[in-house]
Amino acid sequence: NKPPIPQLRQALDGLPTYDRTSINAWEDREFVEAVKATGRRKLVMAALWTEACLTFPTLDALREGYQVYPVTDAVGGTSLAAHETALRRVEQAGARPITWVQLLCELQRDWARKETVGDFTRLFIETGGTAGLQFAYDRDEH
Image 1 (tube, rainbow, N blue to C red):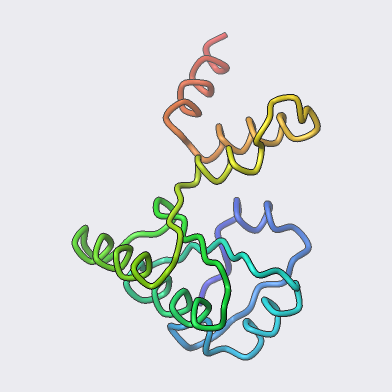
Image 2 (image 1 turned 120 degrees about the horizontal axis):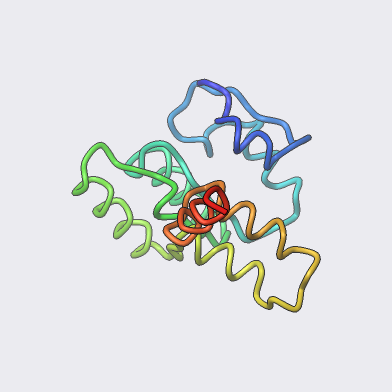
């Protein structure tokens, strides 16, 4: 597998990446040990293919009692039908689908949290949300 894209590597600065051969990350010992070592029970997941790279570890993590939040617009299927069917499958199994903008907003929660507003706005613009594109356009034009 290739390393994560530069924007993701930058956001995860200092965190290790794990090269693996299995489609299902949950079948990789290093990956699962790293997840368990965090002590967290809520997982935000994204992947390359919805119907494989996202679905398989999501189902396994749910079976082990994790709450899983698949970021629906940070993953794609080999077709629209494959993407939507896989999302329905993981949701029926207990996953809690979320979009990347919704995730950002849930993490920000309140604009009074000034220490994170700058990073929120930068990330929103850099990752190309509809409003982010408008912000970037306005910034470049003025």
